[in-house]
Amino acid sequence: MPGISAKAQTFGESVIRDMTRMAIRHGAVNLAQGFPDFPCPPELKAAAKAALDADINQYAITWGAKRFRDAIAAKTSRTYPGWSVDPDTQVTVVCGATEGMIAAMLAVLDPGDEIVVFEPFYENYGPDAILSGAVPRYVTLHEPDWSIDEAELRAAFGPKTRGIVLTSPHNPTGKVFDRRELELIADLCREHDAVAFTDDIYEHIVYAGEHIPLATLPGMAERTVAVNSMSKTYSVTGWRVGWVIASSELTSGIRKVHDFLTVGAAAPLQEAGVVALSLPDDYYATLAADYRERRDALLPALEAAGFRVYVPDGAYYVMTDFSGIDPELDDVSFARRLVEDPGVAAVPGSSFYSRPELGRSKIRFAFPKRLETLAAASERLARLRVPAA
Image (cartoon, rainbow, N blue to C red):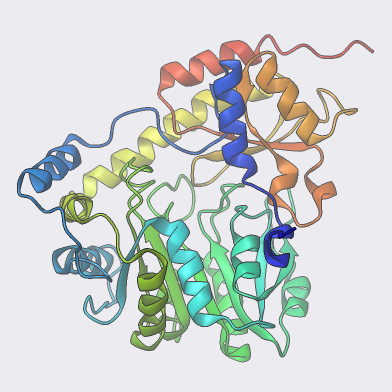
């Protein structure tokens, strides 16, 4: 009887999306999957409607509508002076950062290549590497500040290393990599002729430190594949419109893979993206301030419920340790208990590690929610029953 491929057998379905389905079944407050429950900017909705009314309903250029690619290049250079991007040869519009990352890996990596991945990691990166035929080499970020052990990182690089994945601000920890850490990564990429795949979708959600694109470091523009998206910055996770910035040589491969994966992203939503990328600077300042307020609303409730909280410096997630509440349960059992009673959905920590035991006592909460939603979650967390001794 036919079965699935050996590659597909090496990983399961998304734990994050499964927790959303559980939240729906149990009527829980969903702090598992990272999507907002509030509207996107009204300018974007108006622009999308206008594009539909203008009958922009057919294929855009495979690698992105010209106006949108121009807007991506202009916004990138405006935000990071000195980072010059050619919209005609260095930008590929994709169906979200998720497609951008797998398209880039398929274009750059060959079977047997090795790629370094920091853990805890966003759950897609391991399967992305496997589907590309590459071998992930995991390097642990060490709590409480999720620091890099330089010796461990250096040891992960070898003669087969072709790439490294970097997410800053980081999902799931909220770590913002500092310049010293980025320079270490850049040094290793240059030394081993490796490509950095950077997931920059939380670039504007920073509370401490600063987001420094790896591509802006000396010698890194030509060996960085920068993946980004409208999803997080503009609160449109369902639009599935993203982009990849890379050298013209790497872009040529990424465009070919993208073409045969999805052909192209939604044409009317690319037109709305032109408006999004033209928003003034104060939009991004307000975005970060609003997410800081949400973070600061949720964290005290988690601490009061007995969680150990790792305060995030960016993104909109918080990793916690629940061993002070129930040391007998593993993370999957605790997350299932939490979604059933008191009714708050979070993500088991083991889904972010290659070695599940490293996440046994951890779960991740997401806070891209209305303050009313976070207040409802806080009220439920206050009813969390600690098992009797």
